[in-house]
Image (cartoon, rainbow, N blue to C red; front, side, top):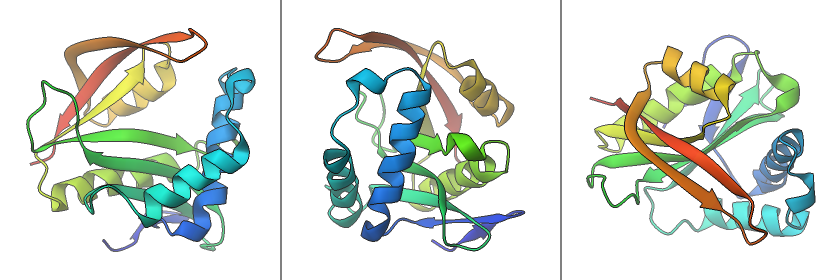
Length: 176
């Protein structure tokens, strides 16, 4: 995949050395969502991202990063791969994570990252992309719907070990 530019920034595949920056952005996002009490150890998050980048379960799993125009700072990231939803086809993809640094929203990083996600999935042969979105995340849902994503009728409730539950709806878009 080649770098993508639109305005002041770039998107490319992540490298293992960027795991700390990805983990920091993820933790900041979780903190902003009021999940600070449930945050795992920072070293565990960083190690998980390092492994996801360096040794994914299959080569088709990717972690992309959005960078500023100096290419020195990570401003967002996305983790993508095949969908594991039982009702999805083998050529359906999943956007598993997509986070833009909360301090750098509305700077074009999300749009660049989303375009690169779609381009990468299309190049990998996927025909449809899916994305589970919290029912309470109106800004993300509005951003995606303005970009051509729509609900496909699927919904679920996910929870963690502490019993905290979140309702989600699945959005999708055609890639071909």
